[in-house]
Image 1 (tube, protein in one colour):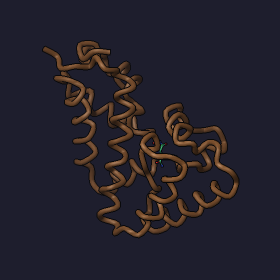
Image 2: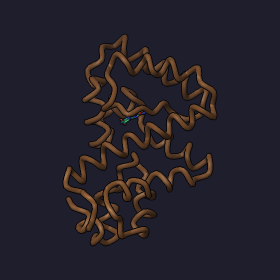
Image 3: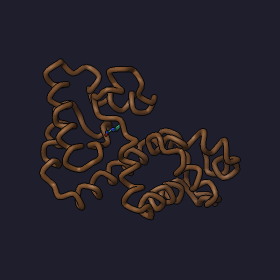
Amino acid sequence: MDMEKVNSMGFSEFVDVFGNVIEKCPLVAAAVWSQRPFSGSEDLEKHFFDFIDALPRSGQEGILRCHPDLAGRDLQQGTLTAESLREQSQAGLTSLDADDRLRLQKLNAQYRERFGFPFVLAARLSDRAEVPQELARRLRCQPESELRTALGEVKKICHLRMADLLGADAARVE
Ligand SMILES: NC(=O)NC1=NC(=O)NC1=O
């Protein structure tokens, strides 16, 4: 998909296509649409990131809370979005044994208890061995820095989902 196509999208089509690059937060795409035209994929992505960065802390934490736990209830109940299911299965989280799944659930609960939002990590850049290690490591971080780290992971997830949608040919618009 090239940028001329993106820049020609009406509001509904734009939100249909980009509404889940930030998990379950179509508002971000709805807001970014009015910033068109975009000079390229980086410019488009930067508008998504700028929107997140400009939110008050409550809004940023809200974005994190829209993310399903890794190997959590949504995965067990089959209620993950298509993107999330693909990401979690690529990280090997859909085939954990009961012990590993329970360990991750306990760590997720401890993390949520400490920070007030779920542990978020770009699963496609991780794997079943690394996720619990990274969760345990970040559990020891300070809330301020952890919020920034978590939002950084949201941006990585957005970047990867955007790349899936745009493909390689979303070069700059001449
Ligand atoms: N809590 C999470 O990190 N969730 C997720 N990470 C991903 O990469 N996809 C998700 O659904």
